Length: 226
Image 1 (cartoon, one colour):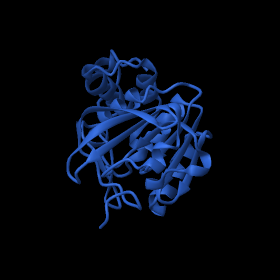
Image 2 (image 1 turned 90 degrees about the vertical axis):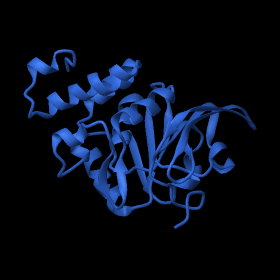
Image 3 (image 1 turned 45 degrees about the vertical axis):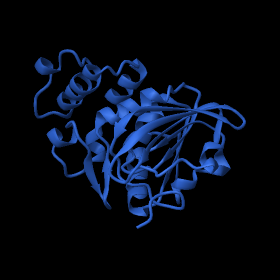
Image 4 (image 1 turned 60 degrees about the vertical axis):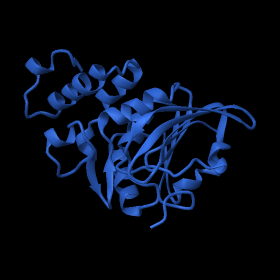
């Protein structure tokens, strides 16, 4: 897709127009520079993951509600996390919180295998239908408590949280491969910092604070309690 000429080449009522506008104005303009990540966004139609929402809202610079008190994250936030994870084509990645399936679809363009856990069956079933519709066969979904990770499929080259956790437990950190990167919003219920945790050695981790963010709360054994 030619994102540079979107204003002239696409109709304002077309999904292609809004997708190209999103990539140019929200991602490139905010210094998302990983061309693989940018290309992934052009391949995944965000509107398929936001049924019943207008194109301008779907591709807007904000989260979108998807039901069950969950949201699909702001496009820039998703891109920021994907770029910060330093993903490689051969990686195996765990996503904690499938939600609409949008980030899983983006990950499927970037890595070899995606494992995604969602605790809400309604959301998981809808995400599975969308991913199947897009022909993405390298994504494996499971219904369960994502806060404990997916020990049976570990180790992972990257782990991405899509909801805010009070902390990242050792049980999940240990599911990283040596050299693996974990991205998670960690902090209070209504404000967090995005952390990048890299496993340097068997019991050695390097942690970086990438900046402030706000995500819906993670539920489960290592999440927030109602």
